[in-house]
Length: 230
Ligand SMILES: Nc1ncnc2c1ncn2[C@@H]1O[C@H](COP(=O)(O)OP(=O)(O)OP(=O)(O)O)[C@@H](O)[C@H]1O
Image 1 (cartoon, rainbow, N blue to C red):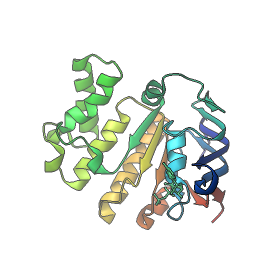
Image 2: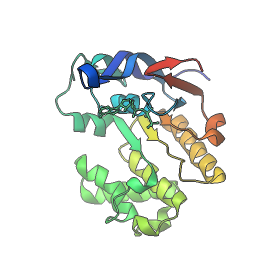
Image 3: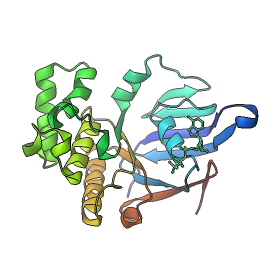
Image 4: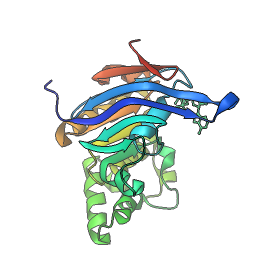
């Protein structure tokens, strides 16, 4: 596969929580580059720093030191380089959490269009885009339904539609297949691969799910806050 643009460039990033005796070094000098079209997995034991790294890439957690560039734009270099982090995230990043992260009091369609409301889209256009995405993910017929009535696979596809609403090139996923059986987990991964290829996006997924390991271009291992080969 020819490698596309570098969409995620993490350079020498460290992150510690707390100070003195309570200090925890969650990331120690991590370098990671991810290209357009790539679908990679972040693996490692509990506490190895996977969620912290995902949150650093997603501009939710600020590193203690190092540099982060997203889609060619420097966003962190000893400090945040852009004031409005929420806007930065909306512009560049889509998050897929486990399905139960959908807002229970909104319909499937509203869960997706909410992101576009926040990004300032006119409401009717946002609804149209939400419908298109749900149709594309083959859950359009479930648009008026609240999450409690969706199956695990349907809810996960709605969560994917929500992450894609604003056409981000960087898609971050935390255990996206944990609640799914083997067949559905593989279907979700195939869908993400197709999206990455079609939209020249990249996908970084934290997972423990061995049944989907063969769906990734690269497996990145974290151990005690460092990237390791195995
Ligand atoms: N907000 C926080 N405050 C203090 N320590 C934290 C915080 N978040 C994470 N940590 C610590 O940082 C280390 C890395 O945590 P992180 O959640 O990134 O690991 P992980 O690999 O995602 O773990 P898991 O697989 O259990 O989710 C752990 O020792 C954790 O206890």
